[in-house]
Amino acid sequence: MNENNELRNHLDKLHTTELGAVRIKRNLSLDMDDIDDIVQWCKDKIKSSNAHITRKGKNWYIDGDNYILTVNAHSYTIITGHKKK
Image 1 (cartoon, rainbow, N blue to C red):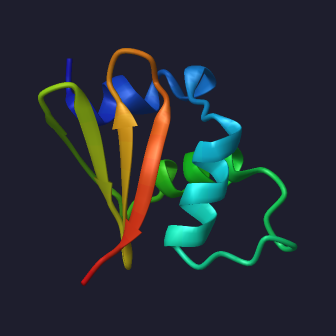
Image 2 (image 1 turned 90 degrees about the vertical axis):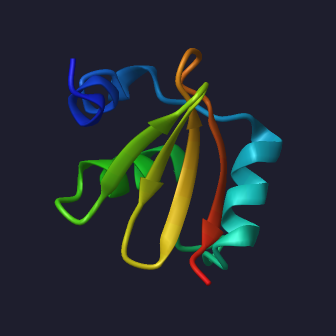
């Protein structure tokens, strides 16, 4: 199965921890007041036509316009996000 489709076909399983949500918002400098649901925000980014998805080992890396998200390939946990350098 195509990696892009594999992750996109299982977006309903995507989740993060409370600390993960805080870490993602902080690392990406997202406004805490504007984004209530970080998981939905990440789903929208993954669904974007600009998202380039690759799998390396146990993680998927979603490379977008100015960010990189890391998702565990087995548990579908959003681990972190970083701004591109």
